[in-house]
Length: 225
Image 1 (cartoon, rainbow, N blue to C red):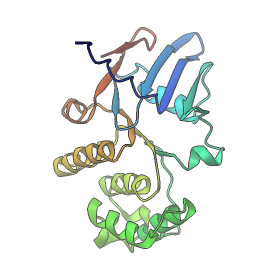
Image 2 (cartoon, helix red, strand yellow):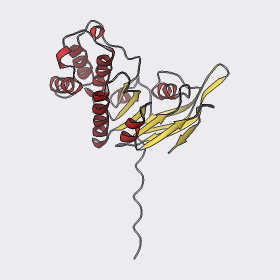
Image 3 (cartoon, one colour):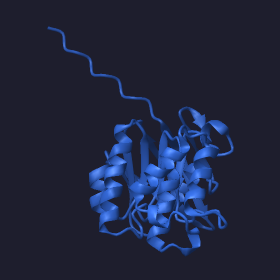
Image 4 (cartoon, one colour):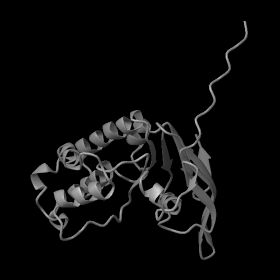
């Protein structure tokens, strides 16, 4: 009896090739490659100074790589392109909020700007999920650091997305918040979305990530497991 052929691997949703970044005479990233497929989470880990956040910033275009390229669904990843903005949700540490808008107004604007169907219903559901309903009328500047982190995550979850790029999303969350985040990211994968995650939380990485890219301290050299 002939053996069944193995199913071909899914094409990469996100393909990163040869990302290199130096600051002065110090090379932080040296030819980093990685793939993220739909329904998969990939973690980027490594010691402080190994270039994890720099890698994410180069991938999404917040920082300009010296060499290399990232593509999302086959299109060069440039946030200025409407097709990229429609598919990519990012949570970095330096996210800005609209200072004169309340929490709910901020999320409603993000949802409507990205043409989220049933925006009001989605915003209310996400507010409840992240535990911000009671402070939904407040300005972001009045929130605690943990609440602002939840608002940053909520800003990603109220919009359409095929890929989530998250830089230490567990930062400033309490134990319950990290547990919720793990549940949510697993649900994102089940919905067919890709997740690229930088994290120092080993338990979160183990629970959520299908593969791990480990950056070394020498020059951001990847070790993919």
